[in-house]
Image (tube, rainbow, N blue to C red):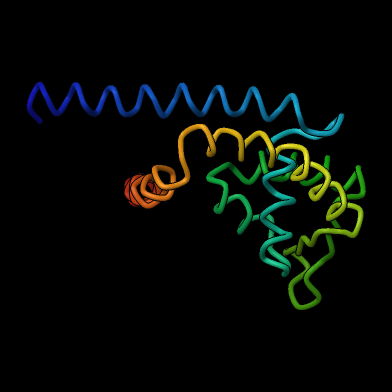
Length: 147
């Protein structure tokens, strides 16, 4: 890479990392008491999929270790937000689904954070955000390919 390309890459990742940290801090404060961003992420993922997933599949989707996902799922199960059942064909595997209480918690959290995110989109401009999303998606996919 040239020095100019290096500078551009450094600026890009600096902005991404700072934006990520600021978004996480802001959204974490808005979530219902006891809910963490990781909890919301899993609940949102399960709500959007509308089907069961194994803990290993969830760990892969979120790019975390199985141990980290097991910890998150244990907290969600304790809160009554997910159901974890054995695989009837293979006792070593489990399946996770969102519970009705989990769906309500996810919807409540989404209702709280959506206006904040919408305000940011409004300030930046919907057209600019619409143009940026594909670039960010391509960047994410490129990074996933490197993993």
